[in-house]
Length: 511
Image (cartoon, rainbow, N blue to C red; front, top):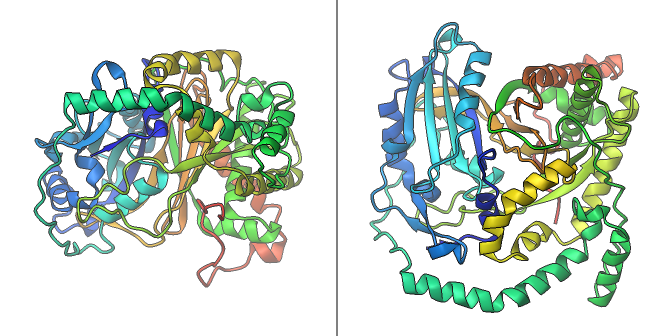
């Protein structure tokens, strides 16, 4: 049993009639390698039952504190059965990608039932070419991008033959905290909340010149410098670049509907561009997003004269670990993330100059992030008492969207496995991640994951603001062609014979 952190609870509080705060993904499967030639719901449920102990978050549910006086607790759901969370459907002909995306977008728009473990899996048949799709979604209060990727890897297999998984030891489910214990914890927190608020405020103020919205307040930089001086903080922080958020069609109140599009690009081509211009694959991805968004805004006669501002989630979780669930632990439950804020150079017309500008902006953001406190996101959440946060967050996000505050969008890169994975013997051809859109963070989010030599993109939008989501995908793939055209002929024609040693997309900012 453990209590949600302030950041985890914030992902619950942000939900409203128009906002669902889960992360998700679409796995495209080739059933030709499966023993039965297909993947059935029965097979999937059996696999989950066998490996459930590798992903403890899947069997946990929330236990709410009465009257919302404190943050909820995670507890084991004694009556949990994964079969209650797995659904199966078949698409009508022709079963193409757009039909799949429209079907998944409707599921993605629905919020999860908080009365049970916060996840769902939808097995979707009828895709063109005999393929099968598996759409999964898990609430963001339970996982971040890295833990979600590691949980996926722990459930799947490295070959069509299922691997042997050691059975978990017998354990008694933890009991839910009693009413008296919950109320006692809430009372204790209410006593220490003023101190926690002041401490969080002091930590956040030291970096307020790099935090969305508050960085635009008068003298934010001077206040940050003064706070660091008063607290004896001698860190030589570089100045943050101006992060004024321009008004775009992406920003403003959103609806409850969602749009979705997805595509893949060769990872070798992204790395080739990165090597040619001395930048990481992450920076190339940011350049692709910058170019795609610029093209979309130009097509809609809505390009602002200032660059768009993006939030880029950064994992703080130690890399290389496996989900600590084999013994029933909960080490992979919850979020260990922060965010870098960077401009996207959408105001730069020349592709080569735009690439250079994005590289420079990302370098500045990384330098600042490495030297600053990375807890500002959690600090902001911890300032507000839980009852007030639950009531006020949706209204605050709605107001921020209407006022054009926050950021223009979220761009997220998640590292994934380099080798193919298999589900019930079926090879996973691609995995397209999907994230959250809110009033305050924009009506579009772009997420990509590296997998088996490709970058798999997923773009989620609010269709009332971005009605043509597939055009964003077209602009993304066109942006890569544009960058490849900038390469010298000998570089563009080079053959990739060996595994490249450059950092994977989703690389973590060094400590």
